Length: 235
Image (cartoon, rainbow, N blue to C red):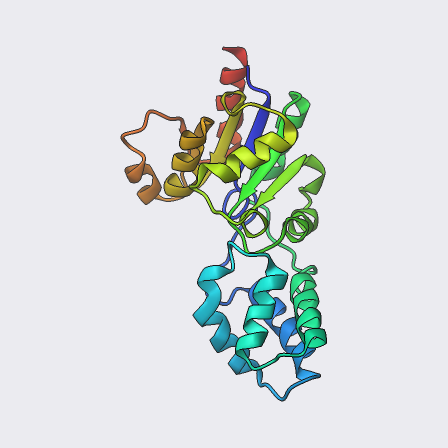
């Protein structure tokens, strides 16, 4: 019996921007820069350069800690300045308004109407609170029971632990859960390893090709995923 829907955030529920300096990244870096500029004469371009050299860590450590690392590498060593940098970076993009993916609201609304718990499992540099704020700004927060952020948990998809963490929180078994995401490598492989039932939201041909050996449902519109879940619920 299906009891829960697990869903990816970036590219599945809300549109992502091409990097490395997305709008929300610039908002956060500028907030960090304004904070540390009160304590040290640092130009914004220096902040950007350190960010580019350390961005590979941002998805697996809490954003406040990441901000402190950036500040330290910029020569800031005051405890007060480091704390302020972390705080300002954390909330620096709280006004960012993501664009919902077409069909996202309908999918989540359908899941709730069928009595399913909804969890979001996301590789993100935002904390749980920060990611929930983004979903709120996109008009999707009301449907979500729990969100698992890689930055808070310390591991990213396809590591099955991030999926299992989310399901432990809502007390649902992996085999009772459908996961929908747009990445074969992260979402499909990760959910298979965790024991969930994956559905690939195929926004690119490369994801289809990589997953072609797996016998899983593939949809090109989120609205089509509703039909796939409905069949699972009836079986």
